[in-house]
Amino acid sequence: MSALDAFLARMADAYHLGMANAVLNWDQRTYMPHGGAEARSRQLGTLAKLEHELVVSTQTQDLLAAAEEARGEHAEDSAQRAMLRVARRGMDKAARVPTDLVVRMTETCALGEEAWAGARADDDYARFAPWLEKIIALKKEYAAAVMPGVPIYDALLDDYEEGMTAAALDPLFAELKRETVPLVAAIQTVSDRVSDELLTRDYDEGAQQEFGRKILTACGFPWDRGRLDASVHPFCTNFSPNDVRITTRYERNWMPGSLFGCLHEMGHAFYELNIDPAYEATPLGGGVSLGIHESQSRLWENMVGRSGEFWERYYPEAQAAFPRQLGSVPRDLFYKAINKVSPSFIRVEADEVTYNLHIILRYEMEQDLLNGRLSVKDAPGAWRQKMRESLGIEPPTNREGILQDVHWSGGGMGYFPTYTLGNILSAQFFEAALAAVPTIRTDLRAGRFSALYEWLRVNVHQHGRRYTPDELVQRATGKPMTLAPYVGYLQSKFKRVYGL
Ligand code: ZN
Image (cartoon, rainbow, N blue to C red; front, side, top):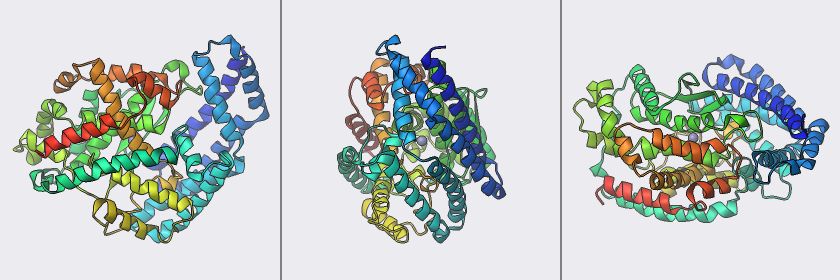
């Protein structure tokens, strides 16, 4: 057995522990009764401890060192060399984090998430506040351990987006805000041109579920390798490249919530399903960064699912699924309704234009909370104030404000910016796909997704973590990440929708 193989066998054990952890996590968010929370947090903690101890043990470190010594056996641009690079980065980071901190974070976040779900349901911020306090303290402790000497926010960001920093995000987000705010303002002056009333009619949950499944099937979701369930907050997870789990949530009076939740999570699922099987259980298995991951979900949700072409093919089926609600509604009105731009409280239901303003709000608040410029007690007020400043509205409850997202309760701080990076990249990838395969738009009209799917599989999905996010974007699109395709997409689409 080569030195690399010996190391990889060891890493596979760690990977399997991580996947077992993911199963328990999925169960907690979908089916577990509330009473299971305490014990579940300990189970997750134990698995996280075993995984971490295995990764940072002297034996694993020695195996990696030996594999690195023998690196000359593999070509510089080989997958094996990429495995060593990714493994070294992960090992160095993991080794700097004490196991007891890993366990405390895992347990606290599992309980914090449970507390958040209850606090959100009852609109009771006071119940969640002590948990947020604890989680912020843990994240600061973690940041100082994992990347000492680096700003707290950058250290957290690096776990989700290799090499990304607040200094790089600030100008990008500022430019995006400059482009977005005038567009939102222009749309506001003609807001009566689009109504989404037809989407707020009474949509039976069972019918929504059936239609969502139909659309997933049409797009090629492989039911023998995936499942769809319901959860408080939609998500996608996977336990192997052949077992992805997606969730959505159903609201009687907001039909697009479940539908676009399905399409969004399906985009994440496609990425994981298409990673080269040879990378399974190795350091190259899994998506390369959350930004790239989100580009895939947003591409399917927005560029495909909210396009006029898509509904040319599927609107008659939507009418058949919801005859009372949509039977007499012309397709054009439906298309405009699902693309209505309007400042709103809930991020996951926000339109494409205002969406990033929700992210920038969270990005700014996270930095203030972590840097001590904002206290947990004052956070709901700061949230309302920022909403007023950027979107001109103020949520009447914390449920529609600071309590709406699961992320902070689960320890996901520094995570939100990856959503906007995903939006930016979704347009860049889609543009590159259209340039390479000009028939994609015609295909969408006919409900044919294979050419687009294949372009994404070949250029993005299959590589897993073989290239860094920057390298992957450069290879797939011929240039580094750039805002232009996304801004161009938003401007042209929404000026058309609103006749500007
Ligand atoms: Zn997503």
